[in-house]
Image 1 (cartoon, rainbow, N blue to C red):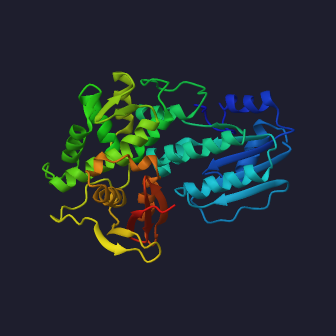
Image 2 (image 1 turned 90 degrees about the horizontal axis):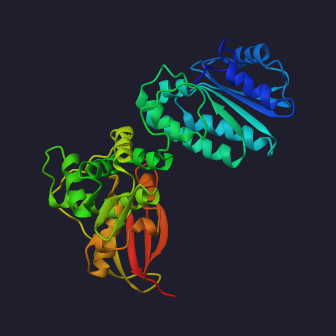
Image 3 (image 1 turned 135 degrees about the horizontal axis):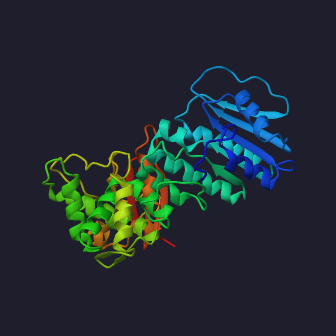
Length: 385
């Protein structure tokens, strides 16, 4: 990450030097820019670099409807929706993939513009996904950021994504924070609340106490029902705590959760995570009725006895329904079961279920049982070899 203006500015010496030092005449170069036309960007390139690469591509992102003019020898993609980061990432991927592992350099102008259009959390997710792909393709990339345009927390959130940071940036936070931990916390407000509680109680707590406190924080009234408390504990046990444990920020030993980073790092993760995910992470309405799984008789295909239930579109409905169905079959509490996330990506199933018009279909084995998730229904029956 370069804390300098992009190519074409008067003080873009670091960007120009990177091209001059590494040489570009035998490389494929992709320039990505917000708010400038391809013609303006190309003029800036020739004025400052004055070297023709083996091939040059431009992705121009502007809130404008005009079509780009033809530029001889340059492949141009013009995008007109600055907030559509998925389309931007696809355009970059198409260039990199189309150049067939040729030595490639990407100059991205700029993170500041993306933040202005998409915000901190969406920008973090976009950059993390893009950088993973560029690293896999061994692409030499650098990203510009205006160091005076953002608060310290925003800059500190993005710093861990980059292996090198050039220039003066505010640094009130540690440089060795994990992008995997930040990504996990930013994914969900409930995870952020769990981390907040660990920080408040000096890094260790039981799952039961942690879930009870998170349920209270999430409840508008501050007095959640027994069902809501159980739902929170189920999702922590089966999804959120296992995913956080995979990042090595905490460990789960039986019913005890312990932070595995020191207190300062834990506080910084909580501060940078802020309120967690941007999706709707409030507890579902308390209807006063708990619909559990029930035995429905032999399955038409296998002949085995089947437990059947349904799930809704609430953000935790699939994981709660799955856990309760399996617990009914086993005759135990849903939180006594092995975490579902260790067997199936239940978080992905939940995200799919929340999408309008999306029907979820999945089959997996959980211990001695086959589990079928199919368009709103869940079936659990004994696995036949």
